[in-house]
Length: 297
Image 1 (cartoon, helix red, strand yellow):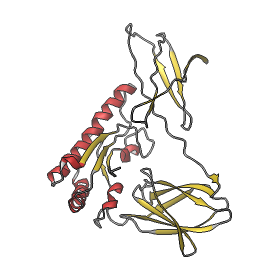
Image 2 (cartoon, one colour):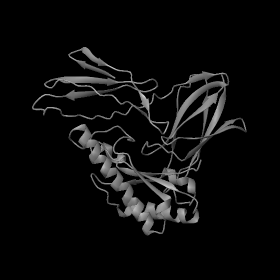
Image 3 (cartoon, rainbow, N blue to C red):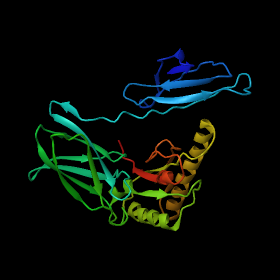
């Protein structure tokens, strides 16, 4: 953490702690700053993109005021890497019409008629494959609710792979449980009300969950970043809204006969946008609920 005032660095800290879940890295850092000034804070960590925020303490500020900021860093997306087994090339699978990622996708790598690798994408629709120098190969991408696509690639000059799939109906039309990760329930601005169109998706999902009683899902609520106000207030407002959206979907599934114990509700505020957008129109795809199957360890 580096805090600057008028191009001069006045605070520099590298203290870092790991929370008890063993995954989340948090910084328990406190500092006293003078009022009447505007500071620039730069937060960085190995393997993550740095973030910069402005701390404006001009105007009437009560003595002893505490300003709590939470900063989330995005991991650096890997480019092509070389290993003993070949070169690793990153890729992504997206909806051809919207450009949105398709997390419930499977990639198969063919060399000739032989399947050399089978890869699942992550929650961002991203994957990585290993290729050999001078190798020619085909990738087959499958995702429920989309037409399967097979594309030929050459290793030479290949930096990143983007596969666009054409939609064929709704993800869960075929009743396959793997489709759950592709379902998105969209909401109007500042609303947690489910429209009739989105309710059809929930009904399709309820049918699948009834046929597969062992499946538990995480119901994830998300928002856009159009709230105008202080950062902490904006985060809290959107956190409440994201949880309310997730609970609304949870309640809809419960009314359709799905047990509450199978539906874990989580709200992520605006921390997991699909697109980076600050206005209501462009950020509409961020106002959503998504689902992730909970895989027992």
